[in-house]
Amino acid sequence: MSNKKSGFRKTGYAKAYKTISRGFNIAFALLFLVFSLPLFVLIATAIKLTDRGPVFYRGIRLGLNKKPFVMYKFRTLVPDAERLIGAELLSPGLQLETRIGKLLRETRLDELPQLFNVLKGDMDFVGPRPERPIIYDRIGSRIRNYDVRFTVNPGLVGYSQLFTPHSTPKEIRTMIDNRFIRYKQNLMVDFLIIVYTMLVIGRKAFTKTALFIGKLVRMKVLKQYEEKRTFERVRLNNARVLISPDSNGEQTLCEAELVDINEEAFLIRTGSLLNARELFFTLQAEYRPGRRNGRKDIKRKIAHCAGQVYKEIKEGASYLYVIKYKPASPLNFYVLHQYFLDKSIA
Image (cartoon, rainbow, N blue to C red; front, top):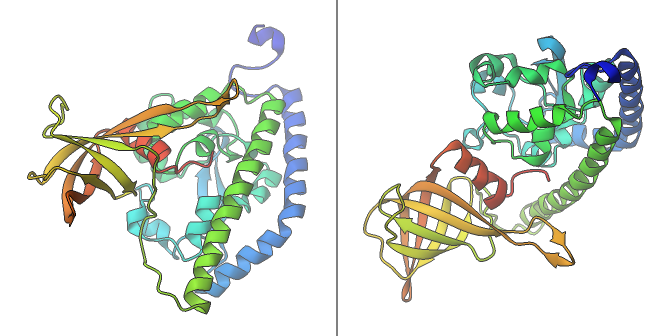
């Protein structure tokens, strides 16, 4: 069916759809606000108790047709963090998150106040995430087809936000967002995304909150020492590493077991002694995307990176090496965070 016959523009809304969509978003926003009121009280209290700073963050974002608006969030960073970040994307290495901020960001509960933005009409429930003007000027304006996102309202639930980690390169997020924007005039798609997001975030929020409370009990009540790590370690099934002397990867020095990995370094075990301090690594791990025909599908994911030997530990006949690494490209950066570090919501 052509765009002319359907009454819809290729990217945008027909008048009838605008009215229906507006009612859909208001109804869901009010429903979620009623059921999330206890969470608002708990989160606001926790923020005040931990650092006594402002409960809410208000930031300027670009909406439909690049119109600026004030977006609301629960504050997860130290006061004045936006000035410290400047035109950069938030990096975990900056350590600007508050004690409860990390939990709120990982579970996406910090986004709840944007329900008021949905009621005001600045945002929809589902759509590309709103962008900071300074990030658009420095990064977004240079990305091909990035401006397509401004033909629809930004969303509380973002397409790329749901399926990729925070740190995914914007070129990849743009491709995902633009693909989903084609379905923006289908309320059934929006409804299914909302339900799916509720299930996924509910599970993650329960798991992360239980771990957070357990850590507090161990430290505050049981007085147990808790190692303070900037990044969480991730253990993978049947993960291997091929070690090469150069970026071509044509010559393999040895193979190692990938013990665990975080956003800064990984730990490997091998029977070979690594003489060179700078090497190139091919990481391989199993990934299970789902079930088909009653059996588990297993796919192999591969990421390439350069790395330096940070620490060497002799363990019997084997050696343990801590490797500080850097992904070989933005695509490898995405693969590492998506599949090896499991940083996406879904």
